[in-house]
Length: 133
Image (tube, rainbow, N blue to C red):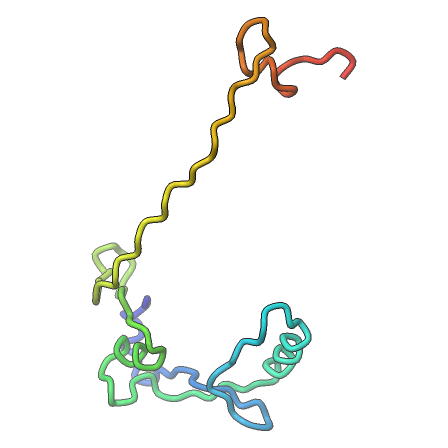
């Protein structure tokens, strides 16, 4: 989370927890199946007229903004920032380590040569001059 230096000075800080769609209020948008562009278009049309429903960011049950956001989203806030410098960044909790991706392996192709100098570039169409081309 960033800008906590500003957020902590604002007692009136609110978060959008739902949307009023006119015919009801929703607090969760459920994605449709991939590729269903008609459904996505209808959802977009509804959201264009939606009004956000704001509530105080700190609901009193979770004192402080990071714990309140964690409770709302159901995920941990790992890093916080209260200013512009690296010293203003703080790790709140360690997340489980993510394994490093395996290095990509590509089969090696043998170098092509023209047979004259043994230079691979001469056997490649970009590396040699072709008369009339």
